[in-house]
Image (cartoon, rainbow, N blue to C red; front, side, top):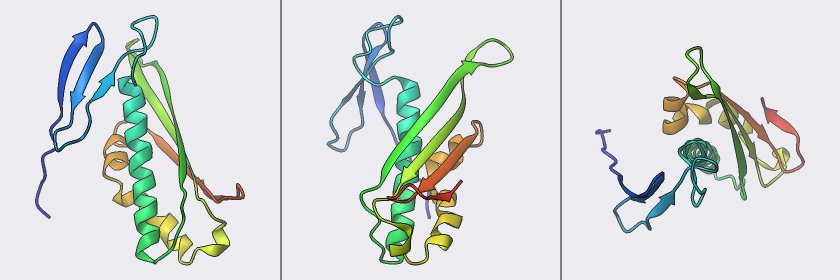
Length: 149
């Protein structure tokens, strides 16, 4: 596979508010820091990072199950990013916890053990971010049974 370059353009609208242009006909996105720093009129960079990790994990899990012609939808994912101070007193994302809920019971999905063993390895964003931030991933079925922890 050849390398691909992804480009986004950010334009400051006021203080901490930026308009992000993704090109390719994708609507622009307004980002902002939350109060008291700004007005919270859009997602913050930390929220975008958590969303990117959650979206990538969800996509990878869905893709891995679809390879075996399984229908796990609707997948519901939550990601919590813990923000705290590092040893130098700087604010950093300390860790992330991702919880993916399948839309069906585990017993209705074939090859689930194999999928759960490998789907994270194909998640570009999570594997990249995980090199610097610990990411814990948990997968549950529609009944709340923990399938991967």
